Image 1 (cartoon, rainbow, N blue to C red):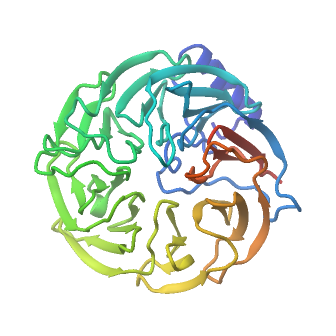
Image 2 (cartoon, rainbow, N blue to C red):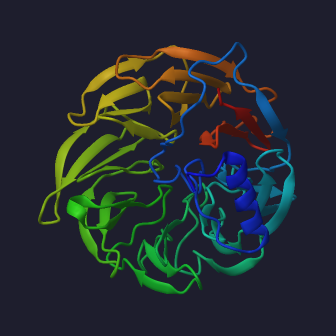
Length: 417
């Protein structure tokens, strides 16, 4: 709908929601984990290139998302995210313009852990449906307009075992299939019919327990496949049969979290706890060939983004790092400007968020170095994550707004010039 104004597009989206119709995705939407293409990038322009003192203006603050680290998905004038309130994990719908709650749907009892209770993943919006995975493994399809449950299943019923820090994956929708990683000896990865929840196939040769990474789509040499980083290997999966096309050993430690980065025929992964990073290239025969492996990028869970030919993110014990995607070599690092955290990208800028202090920094997205363009600190901050827990929800940028979550607090800032 490029010929419509932003106001008109929002009005059309709202009318479609109220009528129960499919809502078309807009360029400014953030309909799933890591955005429209699951690469953490947005095509939005016209955003602030430098921030005023104190940061961009705050539009609203919602104080009742409940416990959890789940990030928001935004389509049209609606924002969706999960939180745990009064011992129950819920999917919440907010008005993106005002932050007012529209409805909430119960998903199941609260997941409890010493590092923070509640849900972890990001909802996935597809047409007039929304799909969510709660931390105990409840996989739920709901009506986007009302929050009414269409179908519900459990990854534990599919033979999975709740990971140490709860199910954290964000469902992937591809055509009529929903892809998810229950883990277990029935097949670590599963494809379900997105309309009914019926299992279509399992990757039975793979028996890895579930960890925390999310599936992505790759198209090496024009042939589609699903890619997942499991606890001990990186794998490519045939979309039709669930057969394993290739696998490459990659021994993660403690928690394997970051989502694979895909660029043409190459796939890059990184893990924390001293593991490092790996790039493979899929050859014309469909086999994975190692390009490089090193310990420069050891990303725990703040994510890495590929912009041009360079990767950016935080590396444990190294600092904020720019890495050459082709060679794997270090381009620059910054150790003192900001502590460990997550990264987001829009309009030639990175937004870096400190997990400890709540500092938010705007820098140029450039291989030339850390060039700061403004910073501020989230205020207020929650008491619920103390003494353990951090600000672990990744920043989300949608329709000119920046959304940041600190447990039950959800902030909206205006990034538009």
